[in-house]
Length: 615
Image (cartoon, rainbow, N blue to C red; front, side, top):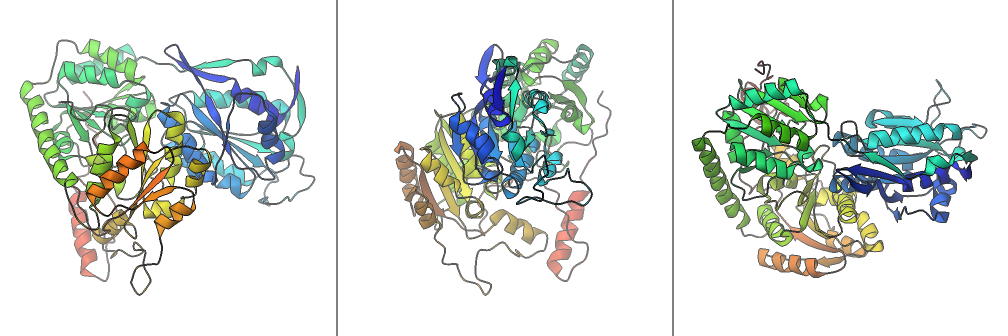
């Protein structure tokens, strides 16, 4: 038996957890990131401060940001490792809810350890306690329940072992993973208990590669072999399962073009003859053209978000679907044949079942021609000049600077859409855009997570002024932890994407400009702000200056912020020629509203439920 506090037991347990897949082991927790207050300083804080275990601690500046960092770390680790996040009770805890929602939506494992109110209740109500007249057992941490894949409150030491084991099971299950919350009352954290030695033994959690059920596999193969115009949609699961090589071999053997979701971008590198690039509302015309013509669509590791399907307008009414996914919930989408399996294992079995068949050669040649035309449009967008700088030219310069070992990180605003259609990935790990939750403020915090998980990569964070103002303070974390980032801060004095969307629905860009109410620019200097947070700051004025600044930042050893001005009203990226469903008012006071509604109803008529029998 080992006598430790509950908090000390948590720290020792986490330090001894490992994941394993294909015989390769990884530390399940690369460290603990946290901010201390009265709800965790005497518990988890004391345990970390005096621990001799291999669980590094990182100080964050914002609780939401720390969860973004953990989620990005998990994504960059292909969900085989993550970070634990600890906070005090009250606002420190609830600040993590947004990050928890993002992690669960994106199917990324993160462990949240918020402090909680006194289990004994003798001092109730304590500072920051939410009093509920219906029950004394409710705290603000109950808010985590709908955004967590597993949730528990440890009211007695005896409850800890089963809760920890259940938490690890969920974190290492690719079909169930997401945010896991263990609420720790502050008095219980400090309580001592005699723990069995085996709780702290080195424990390895096997991450399985389940294979598809044989009958389902044969049905899927029969459907694919009947196709004249097949299309693959590669999602994030393709990358997380490390199935990109299997995807390439499958596509080449059967001549099937590959389109990519936001999370799946990089599954095939740019330049591969079957790589169509992005699909959907922010897709390429090459991918979207073939999506409209496809008779069989093979979704691999995708959850088919509305951006991927262009709000269910991008695929033909009679298209049939095969869903290869580790999660049955996602495999069943669009009423397709379900292959519930790991992407790598499923592709290998599917290749064997489809042997001897291939898509018609003219169809493959058409895919190459469409991609070549899109590449020419991207070349033109990357070559634009102007003052302020065109956003597409900024992306082109960053793409060139990233090279083979760079990773671009982004999340919200107009840039994720432009990046999805324009960025030329070198392969898996080169593209990291959080678009399941599209959470403003993710960018710099996410960049930290990527760099912590993959220190060998050069991390380029693209962040707009709106997102920067929501969560710039993690620059201080990068500086204090000596974590080098290249942050490209794009200032267009407002919200470009929502401005354009606002105009398209007849809302006249209300609330999308950073200006005085009567007009005129604000006296805000974001570059000076970044410098005040400890970053080196460069201010290029032209595209050629930007390229030089990127070279300098890449060569530097410290975090560098490159500040560039762009035009909020400009839309210089080529169109995806696809639609996104955002409802428009049926009545209004301006002609713009009625025009927008008329256009909306036209597009709405092309939406499909995809209820065609799969075979």
